[in-house]
Amino acid sequence: METGLRDKVVLITGASGGIGNALARVFADEGAMLVLQGRSQFEALQAFAAEQGWHDRALCLQFDVADREATFEAVRRAAVHFGRIDCCVANAGVWPEPDIPLYAMSEERVRSTVDTNLLGAVWTTQAFLDQLAENGPRDDGDGASLVFIGSTAGRFGERDHADYSMTKAGMSGLVRTLKNEIVRIDPYGRVNMVEPGWTVTPMARTALADDQGLKRVLQTLPMPQLGRAVDIARTVAVLCSPKLSRHTSGEILTVSGGMEGRVLWERDAIDTDAVRRRIRDES
Image (tube, rainbow, N blue to C red; front, top):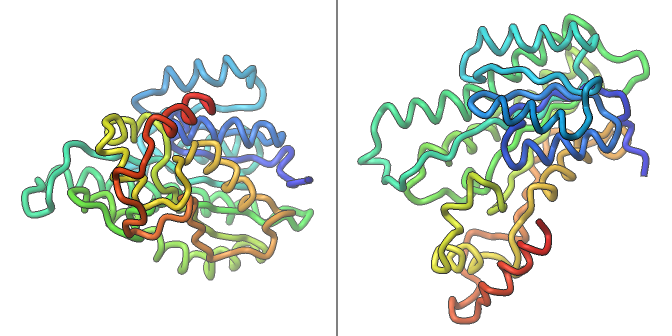
């Protein structure tokens, strides 16, 4: 099916992580040009892009999305390099450890999480929309697209991770506001969000490492499996597609295997070995 993403320029923040890598692969498969942001794992990101053979297709940039000035500078550089940026995926985020209830959580941790997850998404969005305003809409009528990577933690909450859940919940307000703002710049521009549930990524591996933790997660899922990074990436690509989602804006799509935030299964009924085999087979 034609997505219309060929030769579109896509900015992906947090591109060095599990979902970020999958996003880059999926968009590259659709023929898009890539702007890949990394921070602490930047060398690994560069090596990843080189291994994929994206020498002329990907621009890797090292900056911290929590730094507004650095974010604007990097996005301007990318827009000059490729001529414009058509799509933006605000994916960068952190999952702080250990588990701490809010009353015992330090100010430093709360501010750090907010700076990266929520304000980082805000600065990324501002920089993306700024270059869109400067370059104007595409002549072919394919509207710009902005997609936030939220989390089911923003919908259902996440015990001992209030800092994380509130940053993801805040993105809902951004989506519902920005869908009405982007059209002033690009009449066909769209803003949406994908909310992953538990997904097998390096960031989630600690929480899913032991059987009891895995069973706690699986108790809330109708399907006995966990999400893969590529499941999230393919959904984002559909939302960015000017062909497949040309009339979809202001939507929050949950990709979580049907999770409802309530217990559906008794722990004894869950076969964690089968789930782990499926993870290995799909890796």
